[in-house]
Length: 119
Image (cartoon, rainbow, N blue to C red):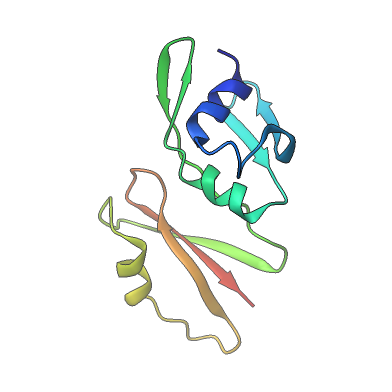
């Protein structure tokens, strides 16, 4: 099964996320697949994909949404793996005026948190 079919099978709902709504690119040698879509519903489906099956072999994947212009990211190391985003956000504070925390999430299964800031 090719990459396009694997993505189609993993996303499930072909009415919301059709092939013509997606631009898929593979970065050879880096284990990165880039899927772009202008449709928010399709992007939300892709974000929930956790596994792709290629040639009868399953691969775990992590889907992330690219940050828009004007935002920056930072990392914090040493956080318990699996900490939910809600708990991370509840414990974060910003001291710089005009800066807002948009999102916090764990980086895969690691002990590293990625924090997205606006401002």
